[in-house]
Image 1 (tube, rainbow, N blue to C red):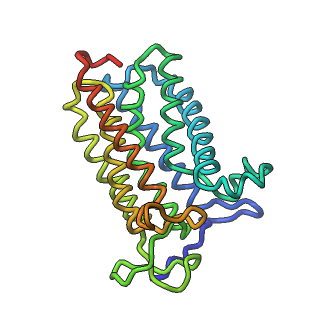
Image 2 (image 1 turned 60 degrees about the vertical axis):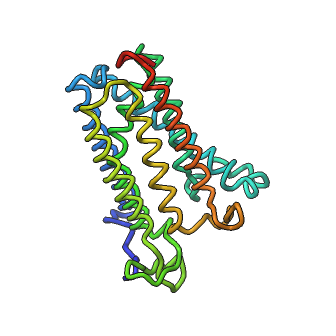
Length: 262
């Protein structure tokens, strides 16, 4: 199979509605719906009217974190000589790990502003944010980007920007594991949660583990390459750190006595 979708759903004159953008719109709508459900069941203790404020804070912090990580961790060798392009995101260049760091900062800001625990906010964001990950990766697949390594397996697909050889559709692997499987795990655990912070910690561990595995099938960023003898990607290094933080947070959470602590 050759992955060569038209990136545009339709065009009206100079205006083009793209599948990639539509996937993010679907993800945003779904996350907002799930946050309202969490408020209805009393898990997320804020007024629904404050969701717009949460969304704004999270979007700004997520964007800044994603761009900062990409520039300084993934591609500083280029940007140190092209400082005028630091904000040229239309040319590509965002990091999920950076976006996650931004979400943690945004969650802290929102929690302090509204007098609730940071852990409560991050648990709610984990529950509402995991399902949309599937649509984000589906958008990557339609765009033919972030493809996997060359393979002779029956799952191999040809991505025009990746050359003539079949490659792993690693975007779909990630979408299934990070967006579907991880979401099912988190929502299954929700009724069993005794302390705020448990689900956010589980998200860090689960996403880190799934992404670490998929990195063995995903093509490494060409400007970064491999580390530790040519076997480890930057994504795996960041995922390992992510897992360790999640495990540490889980121990801290389990030491709390009340659900609204942290």
